[in-house]
Every structure is written in C-alpha cells, then in structure tokens.
Image (cartoon, one colour):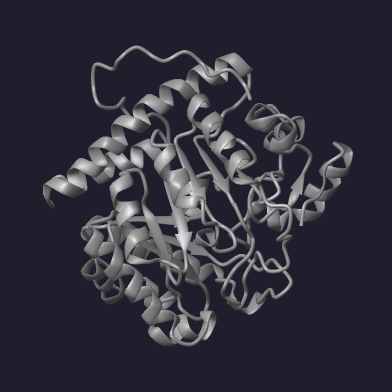
Length: 377
C-alpha cells in the first residue's frame, strides 16, 4: 500500500466555500448541516462531525492529487460481495461473479489506503452488503471515512442497527420502490414490510439513515409526490437517494426506462421537494452530471471496485484493467485506461439513458481493448 500523504494543518473554519458548478459530497453535507441545525442536537452533532471529517479528507485528497499527478475521486463505490438474498426484477448485478471476494484483510487494507489518500466517502453496494459479516466492523475501524451502505434491510438486526448508530460515520440507505405493491412486486413478498422494519430498527437506535429508490416508468409518478417523501420523513429518513433505472444486466427491462418527458417532470419535482421538505434529496444522474450532462465517473469524482478487487469506471460498466490486489488505490487512481475514458470526447456524454458509459458501451469496449482492459463481469 502507498505511503499516506502528510496531515494538513488544522483548519481555521469548519469547511471551505463550495467551488464550481457541481456540489461535491462535502457540499452536500454542509447543506445537510444547515437543514438539520434546527432539528435536534443528536442529528446536528452527526453532521457536524461528518463535515469536519470531510474537510480533513478533502485536504488529504488535494495533497494526494499533487503527489500522484492524477485525479483522486472523492467517492469510491465498493461492492464487497455480489451475493444477495433477494432476486429483484431488473437488477443490474444479477449474474456478476460471487466467488473470490476481497478478504476482510484485503478490504481493511483498501479502506486504510482510502483514508490516507483523502477519499471522502465509500458507497457500499452489491449484492447485499450485510451478507459480509465483517462489514460493520470495517465501518467501526475506519472512522475517517463516511460510509453509505445501500441495503435491502432484511439482514439488519437490533444489534447491527445500534453498532451503525454508535459508529457515527454511516448513513445507511434502505431500498424501497414506492407503494407496497411496487416494492413487493420488484423485490418479493413482504419486502415493503421488511423495509419498514429496518427503518424502525435504525430509528430506535438513533442512527442517521435514509431511503434509496429506483425511478422507473412504473413508479416515477408516485416517487415524485409529497405523499411519498412525507412518508419517508415520518419514518425518520434524513436522506433520500433517487436513481434512474439503467437497463443493464441479464434481466434488463427496457420498458422501465424513463422517457424524456417523464425524466424532465421527475427532475422538476425532485428540485421542488428538496426545497420544501426537511430531508436531503439526491438524484442520479442529474446531480452528478450537472448542466453539461457529462458523467464524472471513471476516477473523476468516483469509480467502482468490484468484489474481486477489479477497478471499474462505474458499477454499470464492468470493464477493468487494474486491480487493487495488484497495486492498491494508487494503481486505480493512476490508471491509463480510466484516464483515457475521462479524456474521451463522447464516452461520458449521455442522451437517452441514465448512465453515459452504458449508453456508449460499444465505444467503451473498443477503448478497453485498446488499453488491454477486460470484461470484469
């Protein structure tokens, strides 16, 4: 693993002023600080600690970029397992490899390197992350990172909820599809009740948590209503993450893709709701892509590490040249393949789908062959 960059001098203020057109992870949580400052001392304290850690991490990240001469993403998505206890319809990760996962020691070393390099947040996806028995211990060991695990909630227990709350660096997102019939229809019988049970456990533990919802042609109209968001606030959610359906994987459902008019209407409602509701609402891809409609993955502001340690541009683009098993995050951040993706004039621009790399997958595969990258599915 690489030597950690030197620690920055103590700050004179909690956080620097936001720069540029896009809001980063630190800016998001500074906004959350303002939102929750009047909601109660415990939640305010959580976001204050988070903002402080993000400020320090960002200083390390800037130093690491100078050291490596390369971009260092603020967010790293990690899928510690692709195993899952559900069989959701339209799941992008169905069929991905489930063997040869990163060991607890390898994951621990990877997270230590992320802390040293100044990564701000780790989005934990999969698969079902809580199938990894070591995962919550990793959260507790690496308190300089902000973890955002996305879970179906079925494996959450009172004890794991309490540990998540005590760690003080976790915002757990529980997946829900909208109406009970939408959630059960996509995820299986009683899945909606399971989500409500997970919310109750996290609420009782006084954790900071939220919901994750995938917008499709079938449920987008309901997700963008005051009734749905109000229900999530009543359940105790501090954060809501909307992601637009991407028709990838062996069981893709192209009929779920939002058309242009629905996409515009959904975005308009999300912006209105985030201005009026006491919850931090995030929407993919709009909040990442920004006004120029350009993806920032492939090591720009984010990248994905799969369960075997392969370094992928994003979870929807399973091609890789580097592995953290052969060079750690230094190899990931200095990848010539990911640099070529970032510098390509068209690969990161989207039109009809939520993921530019999925939409331009033929060109991505050609670039992968040119750089000796391989399919990592």
